[in-house]
Length: 113
Length: 117
Image 1 (spheres, rainbow over the protein chains, first blue to last red):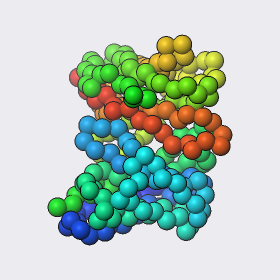
Image 2: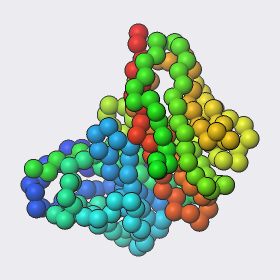
Image 3: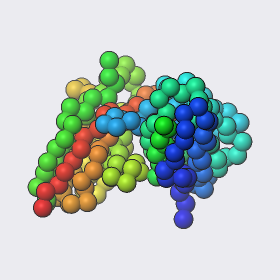
Image 4: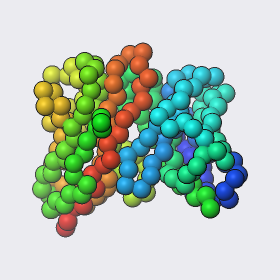
């Protein structure tokens, strides 16, 4: 089955710890994205990558970092510098960055206390 | 200013009836794309329908259609013959520019649709 996997579904961390969220796709898509969703809000873009070894900041990149060493994988690290990290994180991919729909993973709900 | 505005935080519809979810957008680009996504309570985002700014016909996908009024900058989603499984959050999104652009989507705040039996 082709798709996007994110693990784990729920993640709990103590304040001050870095945490890495995984995102893997087997759709052979070039572009991948990370979004954050807060309660009652739409999605906001954190980072995106159009191709391996390249990525760009989105609207709310502060306190986050990413890597794109393989086409299939686009992990997101939530660092201790992120002031309000508790949120729902969604990864997506698309064939390219043109007029293509984005396919989303099931999301990871991160709680930091 | 918001680029995507969804003015209905919540909507109710009777099963088997049609419902329209509103979306207005703001862009100065001539070339852009409009998307609708469904988010059930489980959290995943499901792509429903796409409309390009140069498409002359309104997009349709099964029970979903997009009422695209370019001059009014609106892209309303119409769901026909509502089903209980349609109960979810619905998000309108826009991508500005096509080809060589960033490609990231700008989302509205969503409309929560509840279908009554």
